[in-house]
Image (cartoon, rainbow over all chains, first blue to last red; front, side):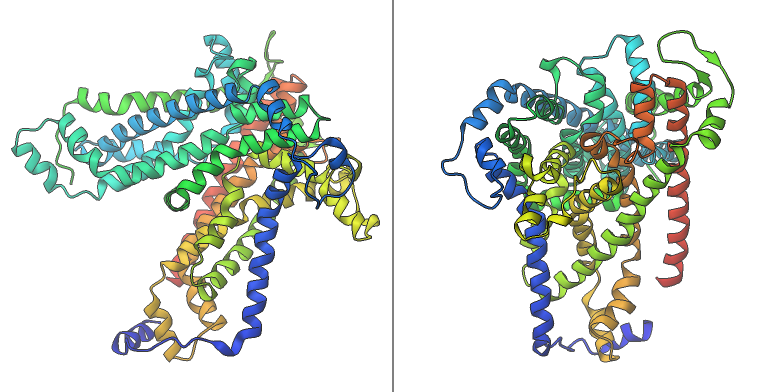
Length: 294
Length: 297
C-alpha cells in the first residue's frame, strides 16, 4: 500500500470516472436507501397519525388511513390530565443543572490534568477512564440505600448527583485531550503578563475550549434528557417526575385511551425532535465526536 | 511538559469537587454493592453475612441466571453481527452513490436520539394485537398473512426477537453515522492510487476501507456492547423481563430481584457480576483491536 500511495503522489491527476455502467446496481442501492428511510421514519409518522385518531378509528384496523377529523382533543387530554408541562419543566431544570455542573466541574479537572505540573494527573485521568466502563444500572441499588440514609430520595438531587457523576468521565476525557493540544506558549506569555491561574483558566483556556464543550453539552443533553430508569427508581412524587418517566406513567395509567397515549408519546418526543431539526449538524457531529473520543 | 506550577491548595480546588462527587456516586456504590453481595438481606431489616453463598447460588443453582446472561450476550452479538456490518455497508454505499448524503444520514439517525421510553412505548403500540390497534398485526392481516400474526411481546418464543429488532432499529442510524464519518476521513488519494493499481469498487473497499476503518469499527463495537447492556431501559419499558423471565437480561434480573423480590443481597451479587462482565469485555475488545490495528495499519 506504501507503493500505491507513492504512485498516487506522483500522479495526482488520476480522475475517478463516473460509473454509469452500473446503473442497475445504482437503482438497487437507491431502493435500499428508500426502504430504510421508510423503516426508520414511518413508525414515527404512523405515531403522529395515530395520535390524531379516535379510539374507533384506531381499532378499526385501517392502519394506513388518515383520521376523518384530527382529534386535537387527544393532545388536550395529554397536556391537561398528563401534567405535560410540569414534566417538561422538571426535565428542563434537571438537564440544565446537570449540564452546567458537568461543564464546570469537568473543565476544572481537565485543566488541572492537562496544564498543571504535578505528579498525579495521569492517575486521576485513568480513574475517570475506568468510570466510563461501569454501567449505571449496577449502582441503582446501593444508591437507593445511600439516598435513603441521606434522606435524599424523591428529591431532584437524587437524580442530578448521579447524572453529573456518570457524565463527568466522558466530559473529562474529551476536554482534557483538547486542552492538552493547546500550545504552552499561551500560558508562558500570560504568566509574563502577570496573570494568575484562575485568570488563565477563565480568560484564556475556557474561551478556546468552546468546541469540545459543545460536544460535551450535546452528549449530556441527549443522555440526561432521555434518562428513564434512575428517575423512575428514585422519584415518586407526581410533581417531580421528568418527561420520560412522566410519559411512561401516563401510558400505563391511560392504557385504553389509545389516541391520548399516542399524543403523549408525540409530545414526549417533540422537544428533542425540534432541537434536532434546528441543530441536526451540530448534534450529529457532537454524537460522533463523543463516540470517537469516548 | 506542562508549565503551570501551582500550590497544593490550587490543585485541590480544581480537582476535588469533581473527583469527590465522582468517587461518591460511582465508586462507593460499586464497593457497597460488592459488599452487600455477601449479605442475606432484604434491604430494610437485619442483614446476615453469608460469604459467597449468593454467588454460589447465582452461578450454580439459579435456573434463570444463565439464560439471562445468554440473552445479554446475544443482545451484544445481534447488534455486532447485524447492525455494524449493515451500517458499514450502508456507509460505503452512501459515500459512493449519494452526492448530498446528509439528509439520509440524519434521517436514519433520528430514532437514536429519542428517549427509550418513547421508542419502547411506540413499538409496544406497534406490536399490540390487531384488536388493540397494533400496526404490525394489522398490516399482516391486511395482506393475508394471518398465520404470521403473533402477540409479539407476550409470546415467550418471539418476545426476545421483538426486542432485538427494536434495539437494532433504534441504533442502526447511529452506527451508520459513525461509520460514514470514519469513511469520509479516509484520504481520497489512497483510492486514486489504488485505482491505478487496478483496485476499485468492492476490491478497494476490502483492501482499503475496511482496514483503514478498523479503529472506527472498534468504537462501534464498544458502543454496541455498552448499548446492549443499556437494553435494560428498553426491556424495562417494554416487557419488564417477562413473560415468565423470557426476556430477562442480567440487569433486569438484578432489578427485579432487588426491588420486586426484595432480595437485596442477591441482587447486589448480580450487580457485581455485571460490573465484572463489563470490565472484562472492554479489556478483551481493546486487546483484540489493538492486535488488529497493529496488523493492518
